[in-house]
Length: 453
Image (cartoon, rainbow, N blue to C red; front, side):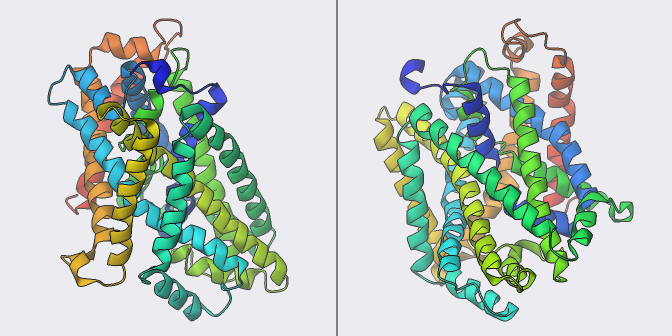
């Protein structure tokens, strides 16, 4: 299949918004705030930003280089770059990782969509115990979460099957600005609440006494996951880049957008939480259990405003989830289209259908079905554990080793400098980070997750 048949991004803005949309997802709007709350606030944010520069951007550039150089799906890209050696397996592992993540990620994405509907119907009203019971009853229901999963996957299919320019790029140009507008509206509303200053201070004034090795390693891990590294998304999107795209500048711009969204998500949540006395370390339940109660209490004097803010918040979550689902589905779609020699529409339908089946079983496993439990874990948790704590670090580590030690430096330099048309002032710094710093950092993340350091 020629590059013209594969499609290209039509503009620099399209490249930035689509790739940033891949990175900006529930990891920013859901995971980042509760990780920040659990790890000391401003100190965690500072270490996180440092880690984005140290780890995230060099890893992203590495995937950009592989994707654009090969101009093919992630699996074939590693095969081309490695000459068909065992390094090819990294590409297949990246595609598999993205596909498995799509399945269980769609479950949470469906939850977000449902909560928009629940907000519209006025179901998100009650005491803290009500919100906990509401989420438990919904997430464990055998049918309701599956319905919303199918809806969000159908929306994803309708975007991706239209191709790179008419589907992904066009949607990104609408979804990403909308996401930012919603985010800013909720941030302003949250920061204007009485007592919100304590939440702002929590995010902006570092408490150095809370700094320890766990904070550093947690920030390192969050920077890695937040940027969609090692799941095939970055590499696949890079295969649609033109030869004129400045890879280093694009990575920096995407890293900045991703970090700004994450920090704004904190400013959206913590001022409101502090205003009603909710602990900042509420954990993963923050979004679906704690926050509905926070919005209800914070805007109790203005119930209509609270109703609107709650609805906008879950619309924001859904947009963030959708932009990431688009990129995850595209990874497997490009693979199926090129390796199986089928049309884009057929490839997209195949990917969405099979990923939805995985999502159905993951959703059902949360309802306590014995056949969908293993070692005391639900199928949902198993997929999350295997992809997040094993596959992502391993693929990221091997990609750095591959680019830093196996691929000829001339090939890497040519891509980095657009074949000599750019100065490439930071090339040697990039190469040093990819050869030494990034692999060691990823190794630390991996060992820390298993309690080995």
